[in-house]
Length: 108
Image (cartoon, rainbow, N blue to C red):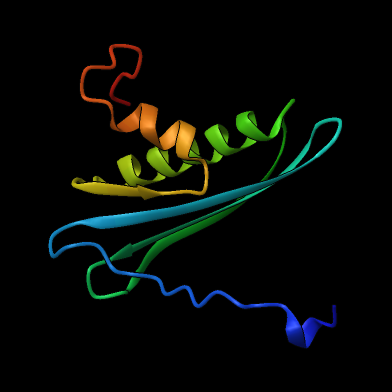
């Protein structure tokens, strides 16, 4: 199959509701422990508030993605942002963060 025949998905970034901020994060992991991460924080007007990239050592892709989400949380806290929406392709981690009854997550 040629590249021109590969179906393309049209994905569009959606801003958070008014008064909220959205943290988009992603990480790539290269065995055994090389990780590259990226963070973007935007407001409801699509304005970039802050961003960051990190090179870290992590033992797995899940650890890498959790590390970048934590870094995004710390960046938002340093800017005193509230009403945050996290966006990541790691549904497992985001689901755990969003569980209201989860006692294992603590405020920063």
